[in-house]
Length: 251
Image 1 (cartoon, rainbow, N blue to C red):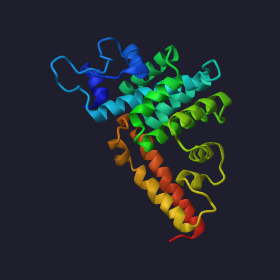
Image 2 (image 1 turned 30 degrees about the vertical axis):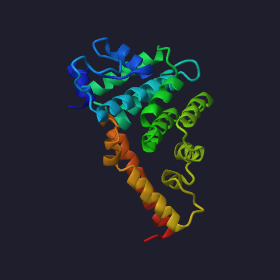
Image 3 (image 1 turned 90 degrees about the horizontal axis):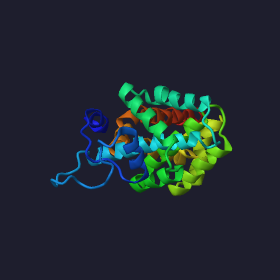
């Protein structure tokens, strides 16, 4: 059924603790336990480990996007439009998932929890899964630049997540170039440089293709609602490789 089906069916008895748990509880009501204890019968939590990870990713993504939208002190129509576009174009959320995302986003806007609070809890859940950390940074960047620019306040928050995640600043710069520069975009997608030789570029491609295969990412706890995003990222890797191969004459 997945965590979303259990939420809709009202059967979640174990959810999240911490600041993300506060968002979840406020967004969906006290019918759901936002603590971290098992039920009194000693049964296992009603969410599987993968479902727990999926719930964390989903709540963290839209909570962090809410605080990102407030980076300049106010939430503009353009920023709301960019979030809605992300839901529709990049994620293609169904009605239930979209309602849940909007509920989390609106709750986080008015919540005392900060971007840093959410980022720290997310890192605590996914610190051993670097692909999931990169996907979150990619989501933040993609939405932030969807209006054509990356505001200073927005980048400051994203860089704080980069620091919290112990993420490579060099890799972050490459990712940023995918969205705000056209030159060498294909190399940025693969995480390499135009100065690298063919063998190094091949190694980067194979590593990225292996790490970001949608099935591999899904097994790490990516919510079903983000599968299209993972597929698009994987396709970008394949397209970047084909462009570089053609330009270099690699067989």
